[in-house]
Image 1 (cartoon, rainbow, N blue to C red):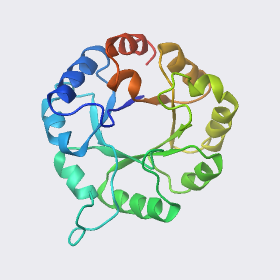
Image 2 (image 1 turned 90 degrees about the vertical axis):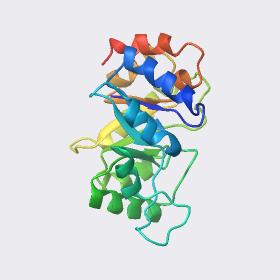
Image 3 (image 1 turned 60 degrees about the vertical axis):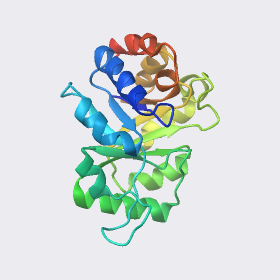
Image 4 (image 1 turned 45 degrees about the horizontal axis):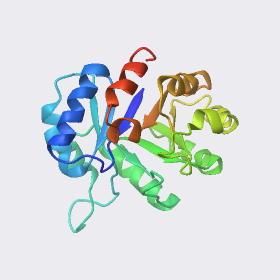
Length: 213
């Protein structure tokens, strides 16, 4: 599984242009795009294998919740899931639990991010769709978590053993070899961003990982 977080590197037509490149070289990816781009991206996808996720979701209900993005809105826009607790948008455990409960009620999948093995042990009990182990110090550095945190990744995978939760890893992943190493360490995929969304040549990485999955 390859999850590509666009962050806010692209807006408007640049989002769609990047989407086209991803469809050509890796049309089974999950793309996490900015809220305001969701409907356009969903409408613009030609591959039935590609899924669109939001980059965050809030636990608030329908009604008086000004400024919050609720699960129902994401589903209405065509999103299949959302990232949660990314290192750039951290939540406390109470907020995470409330959000998981709300998303389960409406069938929105969650990929919950965490850099703490202790926190991952708590997240495991919530049974999300996937958990992505990331090291915020390695994000956008080109120093792959699969090289610098191998022991922690192995422990992370072991924590999720005997569950249906998909283990992913991310931070600094910048080559097909990095993704392949993630699989060797026991992960089922990778969460990436800058190597695709902030690259002048995203095709290079996409071609490399095409043969990995």
